[in-house]
Length: 278
Image (cartoon, rainbow, N blue to C red):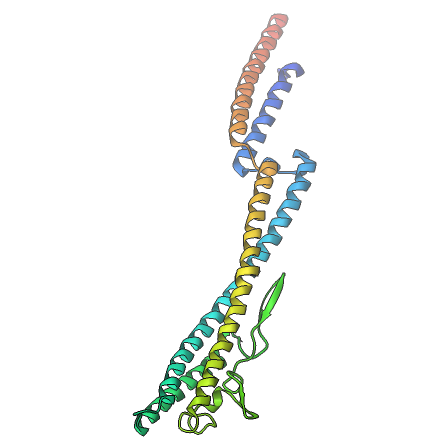
């Protein structure tokens, strides 16, 4: 039985090296990563892992900022509706205070409108919520890592408080039968409603300022940091497709030429053995 012909090492080694290089290029092109294992670049792997950890933290912070912004926008939407209702109530109180030529029936109609507005404001303050959590019960806040703004408790008895002659009035007192309804004291009703409008406007201003000067700058900063870190990670860990494609072609040519040389070497050895056998 004829023994298998073993190619000389000086012919087999280039072929093996070319095939290994070709396999490495194919792996990098298929994964898109220059570093697929620690042996590819130990220090680069450490840097890449640190960058990925930093990017994960930035992503989590950005999600938290998006949530805070959503809470702020939701609260502002509810407050905007209350503010709109109070503007209508203010107009009603001013019209009712001008008693010249105003009949009792008209004043009663104004009071009915005012009662309806107060009822709607109360409904909003008691039902406004985000993700199942009430916004205006005194326990909520718009918060980020850099700070927070509290959402104060809102109710008819706490909105628009004014003191007249030692007596405190609120929006709850402008409804029918209250101490500052349109029938008994339209002037005080007007003051209460104006105070309520200012209070809600101030609250909207605080929430809006927090959005503008805390949430939005933090998001912009995170976005810039994410772009820079992603670019750095790409430089360290990602495949240079142009260079790697060239390397794949080069290693392919080397493996093909090495295979041809290996085949010729085997044929020459077989020929020499045949001559010796003869």
